[in-house]
Length: 194
Image 1: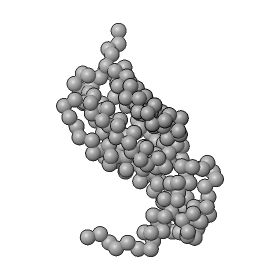
Image 2: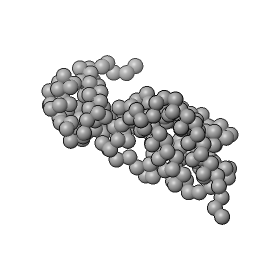
Image 3: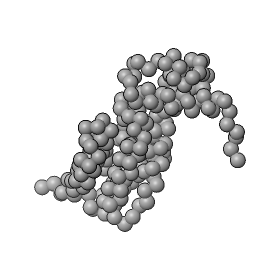
Image 4: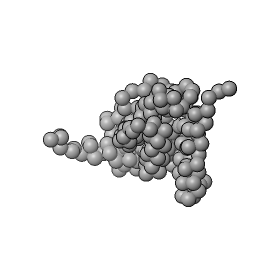
């Protein structure tokens, strides 16, 4: 049995929701502690009391985004076909980005730095991707450096999802582009250098 929710929990949730939306839809420099508190219907002191300031609130929003993406990607089961697994992971990434557009924008839109080449911790959202790439390399179905492959696939995914979220691609075009581009990116890593 968890602890009962308090008024602080409700205020914290409202601040996180307000911060997520504001950081996803406004220039970061325009998001002030006063604006965050007003949007959440609370006093500025709550930002300092609950998060130690604006940076702590931004970190909490980022942590929620990382945890959500990591949870969805970690739910993709591994199979005997690492290339199929990589495609399924790409589908899960796109779905999460489209279903959580504000969190996606906060995570990858410049409010916080994201380093997919950094140390892969247990909760890192790219861990399932890196593990599938490792299995594909071990099975000799991909050729190259794991980090380079991961960055290539992530850059492709990020570009497609970002264009879709921005409305630059309608749903049908986004689906067609996804279905052709992700396999083409993976095929590019199956070619052995001359």
